[in-house]
Image 1 (spheres, rainbow over the protein chains, first blue to last red):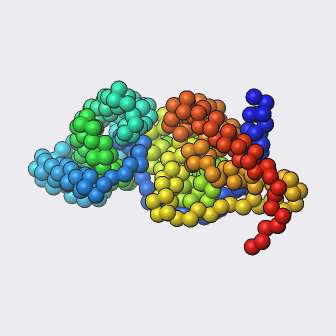
Image 2: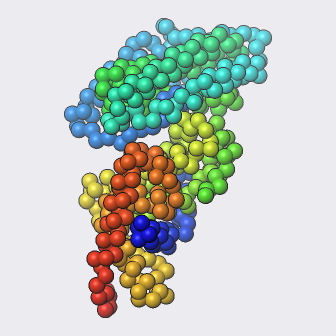
Length: 232
Length: 184
């Protein structure tokens, strides 16, 4: 036992000496540049497992992704290509409630209250999804994670429903409508992801999760434009 | 052990980039030391740390408790380190062996022990190096080590035992007449 401790002390001392004194500045510089172009993720699963995918599997994922995006567009709710302030297309788009008396300040307060409430409820659930794409995760644990993700999607839909009732100043209506669509597209992708997860198609589920990233960035751009708090 | 500004973590979680920058400055040295020790390569370590910081920013909203930030970012680092290592394996790149930088003034016995440790450590798998670094350099408990890597505690214990024994064997096996001179 003592001999073991001695070896451990020897190794610990050597590791201490071997450790670099400080990181080169270029690490932070490069990371800052990437972070500047990167938005924070929202409802979607935070943890991603690296996994090997064969070309055949990649093709399958691409096909699944295409079907998902085409499906969303077919329902008239696809907004990924429109930037903040873009004009929403017609058809089944959700529409914000325009009100002449409402100021941007009122809108901000009402929206922030909803988002803060749901953030407090949903953000704590996200760490429970760690390892959801990991093939090593047990069936029991994955089932619990899927259940949590489903709950997140359900509550996100409820949040979106509340957001749609918020009175909006006329100048913000188009952006708010587009933003609601993006949030709906996100939960739509998560529901497709749930189906894949339930079928054990982990890589495909992860690909769908990745597909929510551009939507999240657009939602963040909308929030930044009007100084709004982040919705979960 | 770490002194990470938890208030800055909380603000960064709400999307404050300046707060995240402050946090990044506080953790980057530690992350780099850990990555460099495990990977034994400066460039790979730099890439792993950069990737860790970007992932941390991107996924920070998933962190429930700012007080768990250090454990959380260590897990991210382990993932990035593993990714880097796998890439190297795929590319069959030559990994640069780090040289002790402050050994010039040491006596020959200390140099010999260091070289034994270096050789023994180099022969370990990345998984075994990781356990040693987290446990003996970072000072994590076995449970924390297991959580950081994402393995059962029993596996962490087994890896630590194997790695320590392998290092002991390396020291014992190398207890033979040292090289008289090293020529370039």
